[in-house]
Length: 431
Image (cartoon, helix red, strand yellow):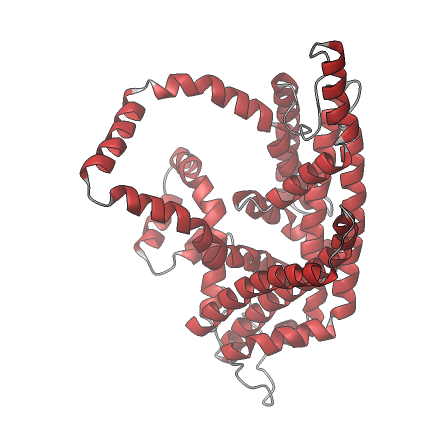
């Protein structure tokens, strides 16, 4: 399923939608699907909070390593939950979209989730969309265990004059022994291969979700082992000729090239904002396109008509060993950028104006939500210390609900406009 190819001619009453109608179309989707959007977000927040609380409780106490493995499993479930809620939010909008009505499709949610979960997991990890959940876990752990697992240990050590007790607050993802991490990563890698093969064969209604879980678990379980090995290898790499020469060339450029240091500093400062404003919205749009039945992982489609497309065509006709070697070299680039480029191609069906509207609305919603939250908290005020923690949560919940729902509606509306315009012109949406 890759767009509107083969769809019957649209009714005469349907007009070519304008890219500038994106805000109104997004509000229309939000109004028609308000109840399911609220339910999806509320259920997700409730379950997410319960899993966070359980993880912050389990990660402290005796049998520390076993507890940390359980914590990693729970964090994997939390990231999986975020993926499910994202897919559910987009799925809730399908019934109100012009393109979905034109196709006459009514794919069940579990079928959609099982189909898109493996690709969702790859995009999530490639764009570090899971970091929000990791930061939230660390924040809750520090807030929830600041007395029992931080101050008490410090005061006990001061009273006894030693360091017998170690503070464990905020270390739920750092203290896993690298050997345990390595064993767990080997196990999850085996599960990843097993479920991946099941996805390739098809026919199993749980294989896609299981493959996504194994993908996330492999990343979290192997994190400590990878960091430990990287530290051990760091001294070796620093003394390699290529590395030392590269560092020397960079230092020399700073001293001899006018403005080099200022230019590199400027790029380093501005690049995160470029990513957040111009590329991250289309990473989320790629997830939306998957949910709506499109395809975003085809490299040939992303570079169609360019010299890279010719090179990829030659690569596909080369020896299997050559293909595997190339995949290892460009695998990270492909996982990160090919879905975004395909999402940009879809947006191009609506013209440059649609691209600009998506970026402006996506960034504007976030900036506006932050200022609105700050304004509301300032108006509420409090003379009681720490009462703001109690007042902040309902404000944060409403902010999160509006931001998540409206962002999903903007992305769904952008795809709907682009797909409808392509269908009215007789073109394939993701072609």
